[in-house]
Amino acid sequence: MSMGIRLDEKFQARRKDGIDNPFMREAVSSAQDRLRGVRLYAAEELGDWEAFRDHSEEIRQHVLEHLDYYLYQLSENISKRGGHVFFAETPAEANRYIREVVRSKDAKHIVKAKSMVTEEIGLNEALKEEGCTVVESDLGEWILQLDNDPPSHIIAPALHKDRNAVHKTFTANGYEGTNDPTELGRYARRELRKDFLKAEVGITGCNFAIAESGAVGLVTNEGNGRMVTSLPDTVISVMGMERLVPSYEEFEVLVNMLCRSAVGQRLTSYITTFAGTRAVGEVDGPEEFHLVIVDNKRSGILGTQFQSVLQCIRCASCINVCPVYRHIGGHAYGSIYSGPIGAVLAPLLDGYENYKELPYASSLCGACTEACPVKIPLHELLIEHRRVIVEEKKQSPFVERIAMKGFAVTSSSPLLFGAAEQMAPFATSPFTKAGQIEKGLPAWTDSKDLPQPSKQTVRDWFKKRGNAE
Image 1 (spheres, rainbow, N blue to C red):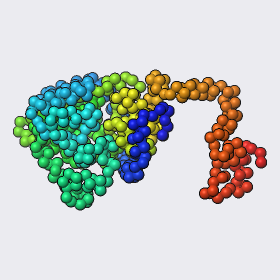
Image 2: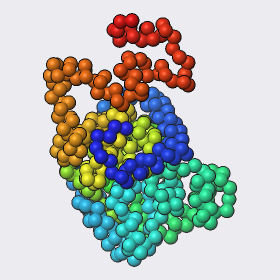
Image 3: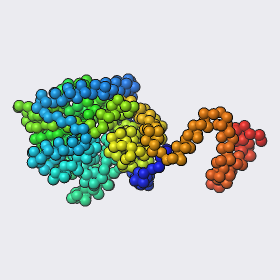
Image 4: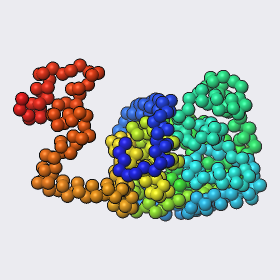
């Protein structure tokens, strides 16, 4: 992991915790290998994967370039169906509006479907201040909530836990069964069913909102999204302002890419779309529906060199191939969004002063860019962040800035560069083991743990470097 700045002590501590946690690293490595494998199989099965990537990128770019039009169309169509739309510029505005809705219903029990944007705005904490009990209904999120543990992955939030850890958490909350996954799952279903039935308000995220119909689309594997939107009398959906598609045609394309990229499936178990309030004659669905559209500095990203990050469909395929994430885990990032997408997005949403380390938490191998189904040039955006930090924010150490200016002068002059090459062995010899660079011997010749090279091996080593015998 290349670090060109003085790291924040908290980031250093989180990173060390991840590296020193062999169980977490093994769990992440295993999950990455599995998810990457099924994604590659799903891409091959689809056919011309690159053509689909091109089309997906085109859809996302088109939406961003005409975002005002599609947001207006979406809000109009939701209003026609009896829903309410609120545009929140900041997390505080979004939380205030949702709290007012909850207060107006005198609601105390709230059930949620998985939502990254509600994590982003700190909605659960805001509702607890309102005196509400908020229950996460996604299985992974529910496990973490019971354990008071933040998510470590966008798609698989409890990736860092195994069934023994889950069994321990459930037991601490009244469970008396074994660590058999089926039994654990039945317990979770039984407990969550109680919360679904008594909730006065349901809150969801939004994978994609469909502008032409005013519908909200959810992609889940457990059916909890349908329970949250069908049983409570009041439903609130919260979406980032960029999570739009023009029509069901584009929705189909992006859902296809999302499911294959995230978990290697053609489709997940449940693809749900719902629009507005319960119609006459319908037996389920909300009596009242609210859509909260969150800006939270996204509009400031539009039109900048970072605009393409808003193409993200939250599939986590970039995380699943990232070598840095593999070693430090999701918690090390200190952000709701981890991995390469988090390293790009977090400084834009919450400022360089809070996340200046994340653009450097990357090997710049480009695997994330290659894996992205909507072709976000993630490694290039990380480089651009580094440029901004150094050149515009002046947040790199003074000594480093002087050193880099010196390097720029030296590398631009053949004469100076040649002189530097000649001086390099002498300059580095104090930092080498037993002065081996000075002696001109390979670094492994003094190792007591390896067999010593023969005379012919050493002679060949010299010849490769153009030295006389």
